[in-house]
Length: 539
View 1 (cartoon, rainbow, N blue to C red):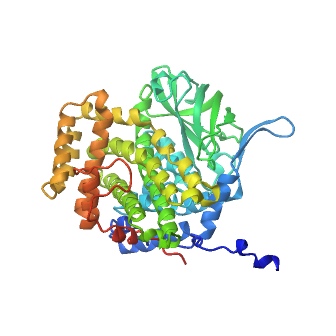
View 2 (cartoon, one colour):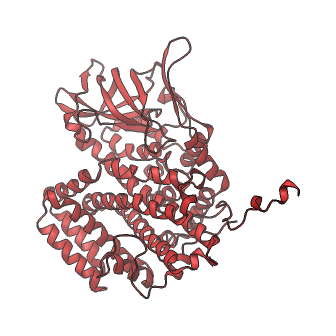
View 3 (cartoon, one colour):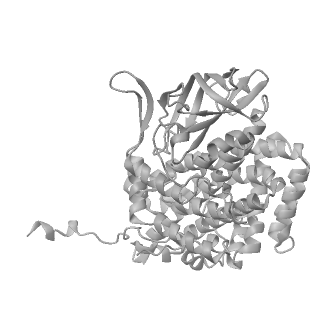
C-alpha cells in the first residue's frame, strides 16, 4: 500500500485555518457603536488587515523571535540597542501608518477622533498585542508633553508623524518618533514618590539624571518621560535616547526582562548614568504632570483587554463551528453553545465599555473618566485571563498547544491588569478620586441611571452600588470597583444592545442566577443566536 494511502495520515474533522476574515464584520458590539459610515468603511479595512493570514503570521513570528539586547558592539563600544525580528517592524509600521500612536492629537481631527483611534487599536491589536505597548505610550505622551509648550513644539511633530522610522538618531533628524515612560524603581514599584533617581539642574536649563529604573518597556523608543527627584521634589522629565549633537544619551540598558508573555515587546531595566533631560511641567509636580499619560495608557489597558477577549472568542467560535464530537457539531451542542454565548456576552460588555470611555475622552468628560476609568480598568482587565482560559478550553487539548495561538493570548492576558497599576492600585485610585472630588460619584451614577427603570435586576445592582459609594472603605475597594464597572456595562447594554443580549447579561451578572463560571446560563436563552452573531467568516 503506498505511504500516502495510510488512513492515519488523512486529516479530517479539523477546522479550516482562521485567516483572511474581517475582524469588524463579526463584531456587532463595535459596528453598532460607530455611526459614521466613512469611519466604518475605514475600520473594515483595518479589520480585514488584522484578520489577514499575513498579519496573523507576522504576529506569530514576532513572538517566536523575541527582541535581543546588544549592550556593546564588536569593538567594545557601548551601543545599548535592541534588535527586533522583521515581523515586529511590519506590525509597527502598519500601526503607525494607521495613526494608532497619535492620530487624535493632530491639528485637524474630527469630533470622534479618540473613538476612531480606539476602535482601530482594538481591531489591530487582535493581530498581535505586544507591539501595542510603544504605540500606546506614544499616544499617551503627548498630553503630558504639552505641560511644556516648547518641548511639545520640539517633539510633537515627530510623534504625530505616520512614518515609522526605527533606529537611534537625534529626534530632530528622524521622520517619525515613538515615546515611552520610565517611572517605577525597584524599591517602590507603584509608589513612585519613593523614587531615588536624582536630577541636577545644569546651567543651560537641562538636568543631569542619575538613577536606576526597574521596569521600562519599549527601551528602543526615541524619548522617555521619567520621574526624578529635583531640588523642589519629584519632577517629570523628557529624555531622548540620542542628544541633539548625535551622541548617545547616558541611558544604559542593563537587561531585558524575561516575561510571562508580551514576548514580542522589549521590557528592560535601565540606568541613568548622568543622562541629560529637560523638565516637563513644574519642579515638584511630577505626578500631576505625568498622570495624564497614565490615564491614557489605562484607557488602552481597557481597550487592549477587550481586544484580547474578542480575539480569544473568535478562535473559540471558529473552532466550535467546524469541529464535531459524538456525531454533533460542537456549536450545536447545548452546553458548548452556552459557553461561547457567555463569552460573547463578556466580550460585548467589555467592548462597549471601552468605546464609551473613548467617547468620553472626545467629549471632555473628565469627571466621568476620573472614576469610570479606574473601575473599568480594574474589572475588564481582571476578567480577561478568565475569559481567555475558557476560550482556550473550547479547543480542548488543541487549545493548549502553541500552534493554536491560544497559549500566547493566555500569557498576554494578565498584562493589562498589572500595567499602570495592578488591581489594588486601581481600585484604591477609585476611592481617591471620590475623596478628592465628590462630583465623580454623581457623574458616574448619572451615566448608569440613563437606564434606570428599564430592568429590575440592573436597578437592584445600582442600589447596591449606591450603598458601596456611600461608605467607601479600602477593604471593600475591589467590591466597589467591580460593581461600578458591572453597572456601567449593564446600563450600556440595556441602552445599546439587542434585548436578548442585555437580558442574558443582566441575568448572569445581576440576577438570582448570578454565575461564577462561563456557560452557566439561565434557562430559556437562545444561545445559538448569541453565538451566530459573533461568528467569523473566513475567506
